[in-house]
Structure formats: C-alpha cells, structure tokens
Length: 408
Ligand SMILES: Cc1cc2nc3c(=O)[nH]c(=O)nc-3n(C[C@H](O)[C@H](O)[C@H](O)COP(=O)(O)O)c2cc1C
Image 1 (tube, helix red, strand yellow):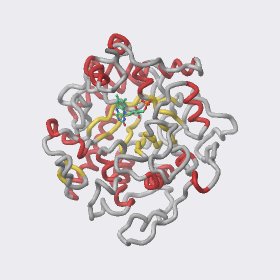
Image 2 (cartoon, protein in one colour):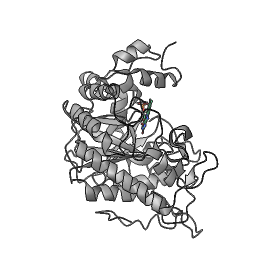
Image 3 (cartoon, helix red, strand yellow):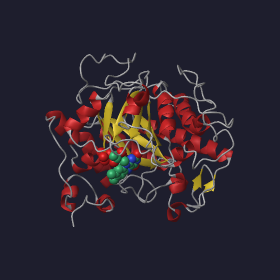
C-alpha cells in the first residue's frame, strides 16, 4: 500500500472485514457513543479556530494549492453535452463557465471517464487521452478567469457502463446482472494508472485539482462494496484491500503532480452496496490523511436518516465529529437555500456542493452570498428557462428524465 504521510496506523480496521472470521472490531461511532457535536474538531491546519460561525462567504484554505474564495462548490453534474469522442462542446463549456461567473468557489466538471471502457453516459466528458487536452485547457482557463477554483471529477462507471457504449463492461468481479467481466490484477493496476494519468493531464490543462469519484455505485464504489467486490487478491476481502485502489490513486497523484495540486474524494455512505459503518471508517481514514484536501459526502438529502434501520439520528452526524487533519469535509443533497447552507456549515461541514440549485440558477452562489435568505425557485421549469440558464439541448433532454423537473 502507498506511503501515508501523517496517517495513523490502520490497526483499528484490520480484521474487521477480514478473512479471519473473527468478531467485528468496535467502531468509533459518534452518533451512538456520545452527544452529537456541533463544533468542528480541532484542526491544526485551519487558521480560523471556529470561535466564530463559519459563513458561506468565508475563504476555504486547503492543504494544497490555492485557497477557495467561498464555501459553495458546484457539484459534479453529468450533462451529456460532450462530443462522441469525449472532447468538450461549446454547450458544456458555456454551462460550466457560467457557473464560475455565477460565484461558485469551486467549479467541478461532470464525472469524466479515465478509460474509454469506463464511459457511463452518452456525451460524457473524457479525460482518457491527450486529444482531450485542448478542450480541457480552454475550460480550465475559462473557469479560472472568474476566480473560481477549477476541478475535474475523475470517473469510471465499471459494471454500470452501458453495453451499447463500451461493449463488455469491466468490474471488480464478474457480474451476472450487468454482464460485466471481472478485471485481472494487471487490469486493476492499469485502472489505477489511468486515474493517475488523467489527473496529470488535468494538471497539464491548468486545473487546480481533481475529485476522485468513489460514489454512486461506479467502479471505485464497486471496489469498496463487499457486494460487488468478491476478489481474493490484494484488491478484495478486507475493507483496507477494497479501499486500496483509491489509496494507490491518491498516492500516485501525490507523486506525479505538483505539491499544489488538489485531491478530493467523493463517496456514497449508504446504498450502492455500501455499508454505513464501513463508510464511516473510510471517512475516518481520509479525514486523517493529509494527502487528501477534502472529502465530499454524496448524501442525496443532507437531512435524511440512515437507511440501515439500526442506526438513528441524522446520516450526516456520523461524519462531522470524526477527527480531521486539515482535510475538509463537505456534503451534497437538497441544499437549496442560504439557510440550508448555513445549517450544514453550522453542523461542522466546511463546504457544500450544490447540484440542482446550480442547474436552476447559474448564479446560485452569488445570490446566496448577496442574500442569505435566498431560496432556489420552485419546480418544474420550462425548457426555455433552462436554456436561459445555459443548458444546451442534450442537457435539457437529460433533465426531462428527472421527474418533475421540466414542465410539459
Ligand atoms: C443531472 C444530475 C447529474 C449528476 N451528475 C453527477 C456526476 O457526474 N457526478 C457525481 O458525483 N454526482 C452527480 N450528480 C449528483 C450531484 O452531484 C449531487 O450530489 C446531487 O444532485 C444532490 O445535490 P442536489 O440536491 O443539490 O442536486 C448528478 C445529479 C444530477 C441532478
């Protein structure tokens, strides 16, 4: 496993999901083992000592690279607007640069595939070849011209890749349901290498950083899942082994990109074959690992309770009191107003990621910063309205697939 600067030994997780068949180790479990904390744990990298409440307008310093001008990130949003070969189109460029102009502290691309066989959507942005470099370079420049931090979400769909796009999908293990083929160990190593190479390409293009997509049932989430990962080599079995691809990707990026390059990770914390307590453990590792800059929790609804019925309280509360070594914690899911942002920040998160609110308002961030009582508009909206907010025809068509979003 890669070098872990400043990371605590992982003895606590060894044997938990391992092959020994022994009892599960007891986990640190904030929502069950103590009162829910509303303050951030002490964090040596933070200049602000949290005597004051954190506001959306506050600058966010990361461990690496430039500070981010506020706490409102554009969530990664698949928009199906790229050309067939994965090069960026004018529609996608316009959509993203309008969000940078609209005040988002970080402007993140959609999930962008690192291997051709990892494509998950028609019209998906690609980062698997140098042919993507000119478009990526243009995009990074366009985003940064508005003082927004520019980032690419690195993705591989694995077993979820549609057959009509990729032929036979590849996955951690053979998968009868999707027809995906389990990868050899050499193929897993190549996958890791291609995530790293894509990050190097993004840095060359001028991006400030990347986010590793470990959420939503895509390939890195499949590796994490005991349901979809039934490997018996060093990439399967214990949680540490299932996490190994993410660990090696992060380490490779740290070795091959500049010290200023920013690395985030997005995870799902339940569903998609992910168990909540395993997600808590992964979050604990990441938040204590200063090779990472941030962890973005994709919750779909920040106010929800855990799906696993034995766990009570707010799902998000299982993560906010984990110790952090300067690694920032963010969340996404139905954060549609200035008040909702403040409540998530008050709860101990460092930033928020905005999805649907940013589709509806290219300047969602600017509006919240100008008026903390701002709320996103009601649904549904017309196609003409979405076009005025910078969505091209393929994206509008994609949004039609989301019930109740587009009128008519
Ligand atoms: C149209 C659409 C496309 C999305 N594409 C991605 C994606 O490419 N990568 C990703 O991690 N999440 C994706 N998501 C999830 C969002 O990033 C976000 O986490 C989710 O929409 C919840 O936030 P919201 O309630 O503010 O929309 C997508 C969501 C929507 C609605």
